[in-house]
Length: 126
Image (cartoon, rainbow, N blue to C red):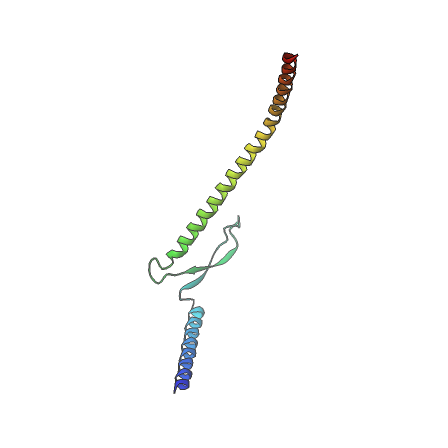
């Protein structure tokens, strides 16, 4: 009996899938349903002579696809954050390289002062 119940359940599942595919095919053929293909002017064509096909999604209820907007906003925030971090790192690298360039003459000046101080210490001791 358990095997029979399983076979019936699988048959019912297949019947539901076939019915679903039939409804989707009908919607696609008639151009109705959740997705609609429309022809619009190509925004990249300066003469506006070419038409492109665009798929428009129809919500069954208001806010159904709100998650898509949320994901887009979050991805935009992440990109902005990464760009700000990269910009900050570039500024720090520029400062550190500039600091290194300005630091070298200072180091040379300090070495000369140390030599002079050593020379003056020798002169004082003699």
